[in-house]
Length: 374
Ligand code: SAH
Figure 1 (tube, rainbow, N blue to C red):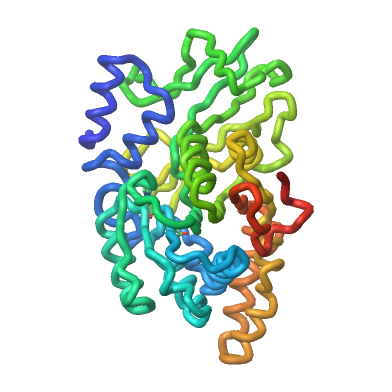
Figure 2: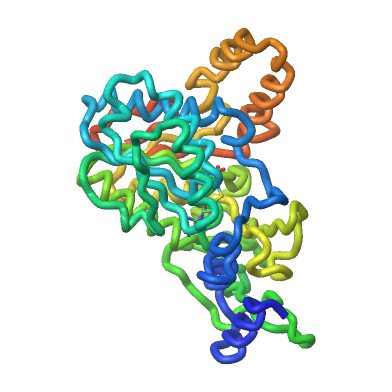
């Protein structure tokens, strides 16, 4: 048995079944055995390819969106340029390359990368040294460790989906929490908490019997932290992620319905319980729920809108044409990459973008007026 499985068995043996959030926290971030804490999660076998790795255009357009917001906010200096979970660093590298010619932007920025993985920190350092050697990035284990001082311009791509979730199932007159216990063969297995839970954020009245809803206290807490920072210092946070399908939202419950916990082990989809510490675990992001948390915290919210719409608004077509003119031999490759990012049946709608700003801030470029509130 792997050391992490032994630890999980011991924990369940002494405390009873774990909630899914505790399981995800241990499986992903246990300091020695967690998937994102040890080794290189993006090592020789890629578990997935993310948007910034599909095309440089993704990071470039996000860079222009942030820089445009900075210009329209009166070029504050200094400001904090922050990325949560930068992976191999492609997004930040492309963002910095694209904003080099925006006078004063790099000079005013202090660069902060929130990353727990040592190997990825090193990869990010290498990549960024080539694009913006003068910027001296600093690494932190959490957004809480980024010091105050100037507005925040923050981007997080595929970061929220690794933050832990809890699941609740409608049973009779209430909800029961889905937990992880041990079955007869002493294997990890999902079990329903025998007690009825009534988390106050879930109005479960019209949920069908057996329907599963997910909450993520960790994501809500992150939005709370962002609200505090944006509220006091200004700026913008751009959150991009794999979204819960809008069709599955129960208006009454106020939450998207469905079990979206997923595990990928060496490129293959596996059971969420089969490879703790060795599989990537994610759950889709309920952006409507997050937007409500942000609204309640007094932020201005923009979107969520589809990644395709966002990138088209920012001029992805024009940028694709420029690149193709510069290297015609790469036309087919470039067209394929852009289609993958924006097509409605690919990442264009599955991935969504939510922008958060303090009250009274400009509307971020790319987030259409119809999608903005507040
Ligand atoms: N944004 C990147 C990679 C997304 S994968 C891209 O688009 O390619 C998630 C990233 O978040 C990885 O870099 C991972 O090491 C990091 N990560 C995961 N959990 C974290 C946590 N709790 N705190 C900080 N970083 C974390």
